[in-house]
Length: 163
Image 1 (cartoon, one colour):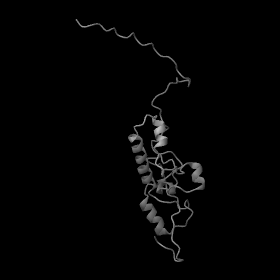
Image 2: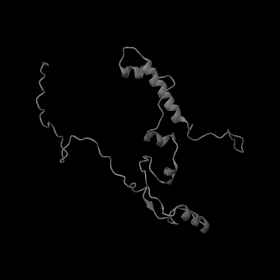
Image 3: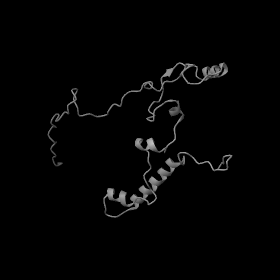
Image 4: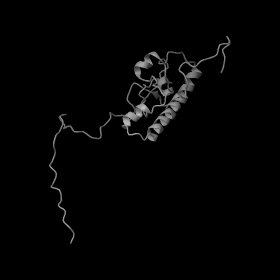
């Protein structure tokens, strides 16, 4: 572990970066224990009873993120994309020299223009081709009310013995 000039050890701000891998391995151990459980209890009871003792909840919901840093950001999030991370292809906006809160030298600005000749992502707009989720099935009519019933089924076929 690297040390600062004061001699104190550096500590990561948000914990171990391999926690998703550890979580997956813990879940695998848990599910293996459930699968190996041949007791007569319900599957839900097996889930509760077969949890490994070292497996605990990890705070990852929004309310926890407000108080405790438990995850790592991505370059897209640093650039302005939301935590939802649902934009596959962003819409571009032209580079604006005064848009970034810093003063660029002419050489720096030329390098940015060369790196982003078509502009940069505008994370405030929906992505290219992005649309709202389309449910695969609905039981509602065009007016939004639930549709009950349908057409009655035809009578069941009659079986007859072979001759």
